[in-house]
Image: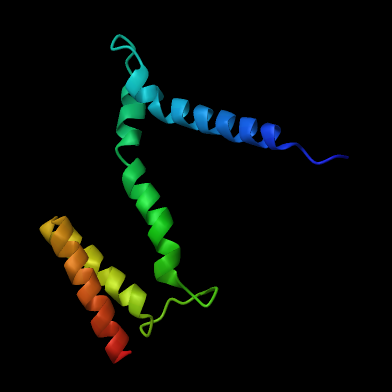
Length: 110
């Protein structure tokens, strides 16, 4: 079996990139007469929270490649503070500030 030439690799990457852009832009490019079903519109409201949770949960719960769900995990403590501040105040910058402050303080204390 021979290795693919450079043009084949570039063509594959460009094709995958184009398909990705078209799939992600499809909701913006649809004509106005095409309406999403109400159940899909309701479900799409939760996508940002689900994506953020999928990104940050492993970072908060993992330590040295294993789940570390304990009070001596400074990232978990800072995440809990940030979640509480976000829930109560609903202000992005305040949440970031509180989370970073809690992370640094927990790092010093733990």
